[in-house]
Length: 358
Image (cartoon, rainbow, N blue to C red; front, side, top):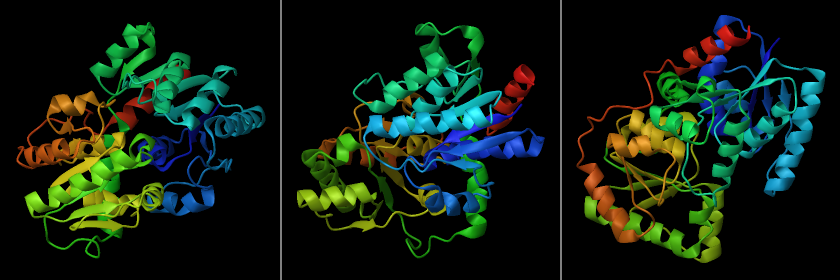
């Protein structure tokens, strides 16, 4: 009579961290499966320790690979664990291949499936994440939608209303809880001093694997530095660095390409930035919560609530458009309302599961 928490990437660990803490506090039986989609468990062990979370009971270490190969390994591994230790309910979060595999296995077992962060849509089926989140939503028994917008998307797709719960997003809980941990345990003075700066993340395949787009993004960052008189801090994903070298691209003057930082350091960098430039959905949310203006270097977003709130703007990858968007967002008042809840989402989700299943 336990809950299986299925995760495999660091963003999933972050967004599941409040739920894991809530399960621990309530004494509800659960176990965690770490698929190792991005990193092996051994590489992620320090991440669990930094966030003060119990280590997973099971780890599959599937590693990177083609979508089919990676998902197939997860299907086999999760199914084997369920046969040995059948849960009452499994939880997945977001839109990764881990979510896809966890949802498919659960749907074929006598196990209820809960999807945390259900109902997000970019309406771009060329994105693997869009396919994963749609499949998971339509297989789920409990859909924890962050907002009215996501709930309405689910209803329009024919998902029964009684399956959907508006809970807010655990990213709010995580940002508040983990920011407190970061203040106790990390220091960003070695990265930035008392200065204004722009913070950048870029990792999506459609951006960094395309020479023209990546060149445009780098060019825009140079313009941001010149026009706003501030350094641009770019903790570059290994994939991005690899592609920059492959395409013969270099960072412009004023753009500090640094090694990736830990989540806790990044959270502090994010909270103190003048503006964030990103192609990450999670960073769009965190910036909104932390009251930091955000410029998204994509043509669409599955976080439209951030656009509506006024914390975020879509700039695509045109250099001039990115630079104009940054200048505009830097001047924007940080008085928007966070649309993702008050930081009690994990409590609500666990309460719903407890009431319905136990």
